[in-house]
Amino acid sequence: MRRWRVFSLAIFMLVLLSGCGKEFQSTLIPQGEVAKQQLDLMLLATGMMVFVVLVVSIIFMYVVMKFRRKKENANLIPEQIEGNHKLELIWTIIPIILLFILAVPTVTKTFALADTKEASKENSDALVVNVTARLYWWEFEYKNQKIITSQELVIPTGEKVYLNLKGEDIKHSFWVPSLAGKMDANTDNANSMWLEADKAGTYNGFCTEFCGASHALMQFKVRAVTPEAFTGWLKQMAEQHGEVASDASEQVTKGEEIFNQSCITCHATDASDSRPAAARIAPNLANFGDRDTIAGILDNTPENVKKWLEDPNAVKPGNKMAGQYGDLTDTEIDAVAAYLSSLKVE
Ligand code: CUA
Image (cartoon, rainbow, N blue to C red; front, side, top):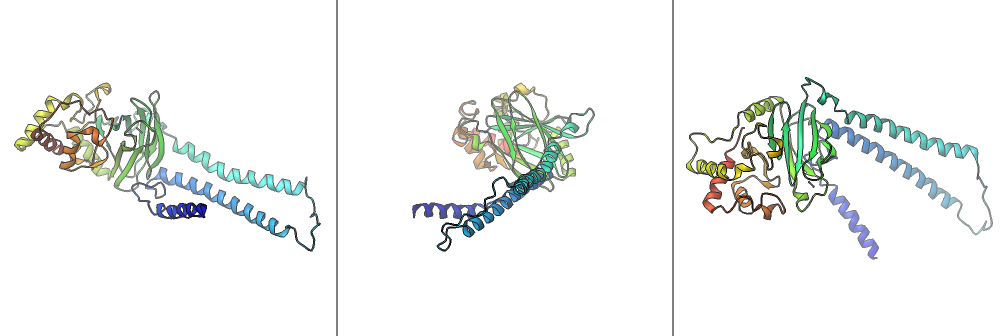
């Protein structure tokens, strides 16, 4: 009885979970070329496995029923077929054919999806982004455009985006379920991959290598926009130096002042790559006001900016910002929050 209860609960959960897929976060609802090809492979492999299990089960059931001991022929020994050449050939050749059907597309696609040669060619106009994973945030450096951002990777739709992945402190792993399978961000070598988004939208990204207390909170977004919007975004980012407009409110100006006295040692508000990689020890905030989330996990609202500034460790345990910038009064926190929210390029 207990076993049945557990079993029916598992079935119920399976049905419940199968309804969880959303296009911004599901491998099963692919939103780009790479994810589509990977899903095709999964379906092919699963389909073949189901086919084999079905055929074997049906034959097994048939044999069990047909040759079971019956009253009328209790001592009957069916025909013995050990060493039957025909049968042995059949059950050797069928698996070989099945393996071929599985291997050919798997090998072809594996090589096609790992092909990032275009990105390393000289004078290539491919879009290359160096992704750096750190405890517990992501940096995106647009190599040829010399633009840096963090936590939100902006990409154009319908174009291959080449990524070089590295982990700065320890190993992390980069995964955007709707766009591509995951790949490790190692500390001693760069892994490269590419992905593509078919249509505009915001897709959820995750760290999928256990890296510490806030591993599960090490999230990011990929925002796909039209190619025109992307070109505009790059141009705006290049012009962003984090200065407030001359007509900004007193609170925002005050916030900038406080920011430039303490936060600027770790955080940049300039989107250019003028800081050397070693000095980029905290997320670049050049377009903070445009981002969907704060720290990758909280909705970007003024209340949440304050919540984060008051106690970063309560939001993301073990993150490196905690305790780094002294105590700000409530008014100062409000001012910094107002300044950060004003950092927009769109
Ligand atoms: Cu970074 Cu898990």
